[in-house]
Length: 539
Ligand SMILES: Cc1cc2nc3c(=O)[nH]c(=O)nc-3n(C[C@H](O)[C@H](O)[C@H](O)COP(=O)(O)OP(=O)(O)OC[C@H]3O[C@@H](n4cnc5c(N)ncnc54)[C@H](O)[C@@H]3O)c2cc1C
Picture 1 (cartoon, protein in one colour):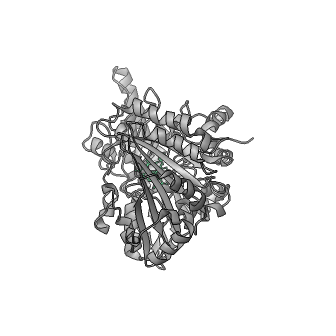
Picture 2: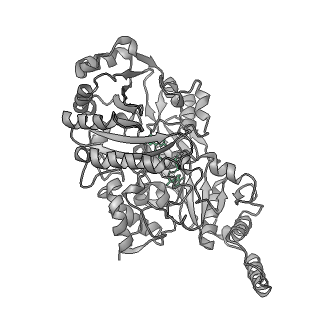
Picture 3: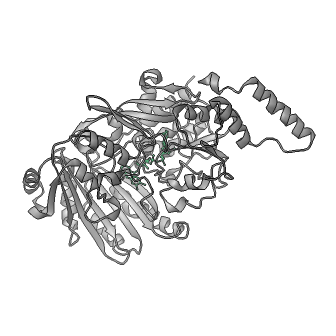
């Protein structure tokens, strides 16, 4: 491949000659876009028109916006200079080689759900240096192997596309990953991947058995050729730092014929119940996953739903609940048993999550017409009643629309060592909290005010109750408030120290190992973004 993407001698001569002619005639030099296109077409041996887009070409804006999932970033002034939409793997290799050669960095996008939009924009104040957006949405095949126990899934596939193919292939096999159908496999799995099966089977990234990646030299590596260090890093360390992940080979897990779901509205006097839930939910059998969803109306009321999922039938689930959490007081009619694939489509009170047919899982258009800012915490000790009351008084007095998800850990998550993959939030964590503040309309208008509210809630209300030293976070809910790489392509010990501030929040002791892996595979830090891992090159 490298030889294919090396510019032919005649092209180089042509470019040099044309530069001399241009200079002589006082005409502008070829633009980076044209150099990239020449490099690209030269390597693939045909026109790059259907694959490479620039702001002046038809289709550029549609493709750019096709997977912007947070309205805040729709009108971002930071836009790609070049947009590449590969239709085969060699296009990805060529993009890396040509991008590097002309000195333009990449942003890699699979599903476009990055909380800070870093897969398609720069967050630097001045808009950052020009970049190429590599959008993988046309590389999205999912193929289950002949014995039905493993599957190769392209990064550009969405979770919905993956779930659809797996459900069609075998209703008793699944993959433990997140809830939202348009989330991309590339970003989600490389950052961890939490869903209803995580207490039973761990994270999505815990169930990856192989991976194909284009490295900084444009080579395609698999697990064997990349080695165990890099393979470790891309299973939770966030993909964008190490190369372009083409696909993951995933291990499928067993699912019984029926699963049980209940959405229990417990908005009336919920605090005693939440208090009790904290002691019980993470200790329940692995098959049980009971989350608490808290929503403010913005007009003083706070709704509380207990979202229950059980790998098994209703009778058994009710039996477990009546002995372990009788306070929930679940009525028989409040729960439904269904197949796993039906459960993927089911959500009683949220239009966005409902899929009336299995085929609706294939819809990859952005589903949320909102702007939002997210934050994350891990809880290690139950919050005392006084603390819960404190939270409640804040939530019931805000005019913000807030969504909080408290998801219990435990089960398999406590059985995996902190250093086994880059995701370290294992033993000791009893639940995690996702905080979202969201609003409709033009994203930017309310951004400052709403972001200020969530920052203040996180800092001034929640600090005493959550993990500390470091206060941990989840790379899949990226939060630039934690700190950023301020220098583009930063290297050296200063870069390592600067990024440590947020790096240890996401990865704890694994941050240093990630930086060492990065130092080996991309020492010049070509794969850079505002929260990518900096290279630590050991002497
Ligand atoms: C509405 C919504 C629901 C969510 N639900 C869940 C959930 O249930 N559970 C959960 O754990 N998380 C959830 N998330 C978080 C989600 O897992 C992360 O935002 C994830 O990184 C998104 O992946 P993506 O491919 O869609 O995003 P992208 O924006 O495309 O990518 C995210 C990051 O990964 C990098 N990246 C993407 N593809 C590649 C690749 N092929 N190679 C290398 N780097 C790559 C990008 O450059 C970027 O840094 C949700 C997010 C949203 C917005």
